[in-house]
Length: 90
Image (cartoon, rainbow, N blue to C red):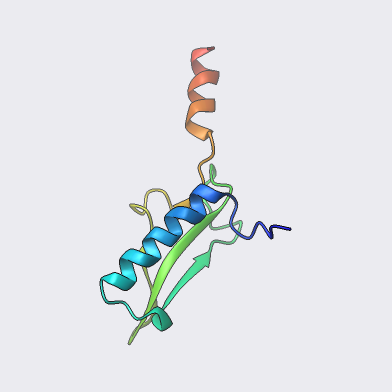
């Protein structure tokens, strides 16, 4: 049985790619974590959202937030397509 901790496979895939990139760039895996956003932190269109954080001398710092505009690794589902379809009456 799948736990569905991460909302979908595509989101999980890109989180894994981010992990590989950061560790190959020299980040110690012991100082790297993914933090799932709480419901009140997510963008209105997101079903699931995560930040990659690195532990530094300042504490845990967000280092990957998908351009910040998307509020982390966000599963936008079909929000944009549905919104455009609704407005254009397609």
